[in-house]
Image (cartoon, rainbow, N blue to C red):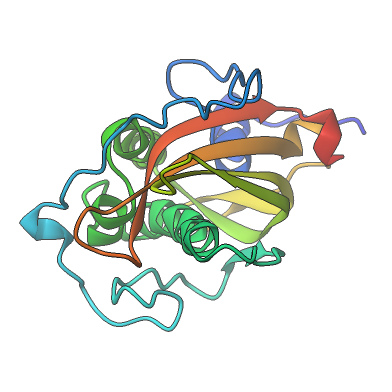
Length: 222
């Protein structure tokens, strides 16, 4: 569908709200063979700033990933039978909640971000948040995640979580004015993600995003 014309700044804000793009390129090569790309990325212990900021029913790890009512992330996922894959999938969702919590709280150093991300995954999250802070944008509406798949390394300590994202009802919003920057639905609203989740060394329940691969305008998700 044809998009309405927006001022340059508004168009940038809308795009930032709709897509989380991959740092260092979005080439998705993790499915070329059975080896999970980036699975050798180890999990690092969160810094002291990553200690739980408050309880949340969304996070059994005790990390606050609560979001405002107008920022709705819907994870339409069925849990896999494997315990490690189910835990990794849950924390992949928390990784996204943490990013948007950082956007809402206006900080890339939010405890949730440093709890659910490590290595390149942490850098990715901080860049995504930083871009929105620089533009003075936040987000509003509903973003849906669906068609999830998981696969583990033989050790079970790394899990690739793949899924689609639909941001047709998710918009940028100017922080100062509260103006919602609505756009018409288009292929750019659909992305396919593959996140490499690694198990935190001293916890069976906490998993961290270590790598992020994104396919933008993903036909498989439309």
